[in-house]
Image (cartoon, rainbow over all chains, first blue to last red; front, side, top):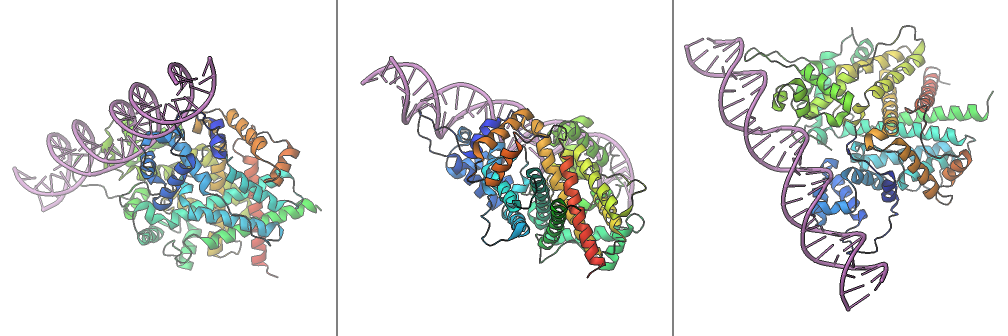
Length: 257
Length: 257
DNA sequence: GGCAAACTGTTTACGTCGTATAGCAAGTAG
DNA sequence: CTACTTGCTATACGACGTAAACAGTTTGCC
């Protein structure tokens, strides 16, 4: 589970995330900065995926040697965490969104979009509670969307947890399907065919009566949705379900019978 | 992104997942089996986390040398995938569940429970579409729960995607928080304190008006929920929201106005 | 102004990892 | 019986994260 077996220092993590380290008063002037290192890591991940990000690689790209990075970041794990934090900033909500529902829809769509652009972030294990500036910013955006619904702070935080879970879970599934070629080195069509073969060979009416019926009725031959590789329709559908559920909760909460 | 840079073979993956390899007709009798290798990997992961699973380690545990494993499994990536597949079998639904809602609730809870017991599975990247027997079994369970609601196959599959996303996303957040000590080597109390420090130091009414108000009103000093480390209350709350949304969809679908 | 302390970057090294490949032995098809 | 297939071992390689020592740079303090 833990990738880094040494002890992380939560205070150091906070300093790094919020960029509040005291500047040194002695010694040579640093030629690098933490931000440069993180940005370089992000650039490599954007171009080649997170597996291409090694300390050597980042150092090479910056024109320094590997161990110099450790002057700025305690470990690779910390670097990955900082990369995810910096790479996942959400935009400001557009003006004109009316009501909690539109705002939360925008918020969820924005985050899924961030993940779609930076899907490598989904492969970085989450090791510690989300407490970086962009993560807190996101929290605030969602909470602000619900401000005025009459819900308590605890209830709003609960809804935030639900939406966050749904958004991230969906993004992961979407990435798995959309990026299968990059992940496995095999064409997506081959996976689609294999899925179809699985359906015809292994799905049977005895063990899978409902699925077998659906497959037969709807003529599924694979899983791919060529015009919707990031499962946007599924996401929108699911988001509406969740928002409907929230609507119902709010109704019941502010107008109990 | 891709961990294994060679080409995966979807047909081979299917064979391995469904255990339908032709038995060899020549050569020495194998002393090992794929199932033994997978089970050993699972045992190591259960005891020490997935990072402890290396080909060497698995081979050592079995009393063989590392390279012999490659007679049975093409790569470590395949081994991890097989481990996740075998480790995440859901139970049979209990008798007496009435209605789609109770069945889907049970289903969702069962999967979260599987993740709670085998939380290392959340750290294994998903590289290919879910098509193993236990994954298909889960699909069938959810679809069967909705059979008879009047929804189309496509709609039911859509709901399956939503629930899957939510369940997995939530499990990941829960694991992040519950396992912070194991993941970082630092006591959870230290992270809780750091979170509290973050709230007091960096959350401010100018940039985070809603969050700052909530924190002030409700006296949050950290994030931990000591009696609910796996966020079961949040999960149940969110699941109800989603189920409410599904209920509404079903109503509208089978009784449109 | 000089010295000590703190800091930056480099070099070297280590242990661990996944996996390629060659070699030998076991067992079967023809 | 021979050739082929298959199972396992041994050896090796490249890659990785990171520890620790070293040399040079810069500042605080006396």
